[in-house]
Length: 116
Length: 115
Image (cartoon, rainbow over all chains, first blue to last red; front, side):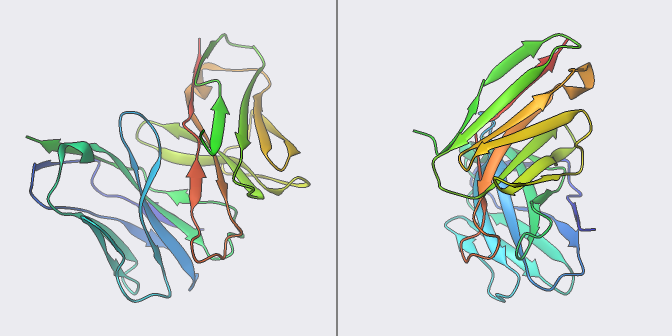
């Protein structure tokens, strides 16, 4: 069974600085998707960035980028120029291609605080 | 209007009561999911449905049941609520599982408290 591990329960960063959130996963699949979701205090689940495993190029979305290391089964999220609005829970998630197991498998989350 | 709508947004109930959480979507997706979020545990899958006639148990289905009334509607029921079912519940939808833009779309959640 697939698992997702986020080893940092909480992190903090100064406004305008850069922070990296870690995520590792375990799977025997070759094709899959990886995601980072953000959950601000409003509790809405917001997709931050996604990566398809067959793509070697790391995904980027404005200030957010990932470091995808397929062999190491690592998928870290880098937030550049951190803003107060980035304060949230961040969840790493895995979905196998075709979704035969029907769902996203989530890590336990990292609580990020951006300090002024 | 939201693409994935959950009702109610908040609910307080008593132990032993039957409660239904509802989810409707306008995205036209076949796949729908119910997740539960507990502090420190992330989100865990309760049930999922690939179409109206296909319903499957997830990781933590005990004490829950679901109904897929139509492509757009997927309800979660707690037959006899207990305090450890106090949690934030999310409904979500997705495409086929193979799309180039594959991802889950979430509702805004239902905070359930069982006293």
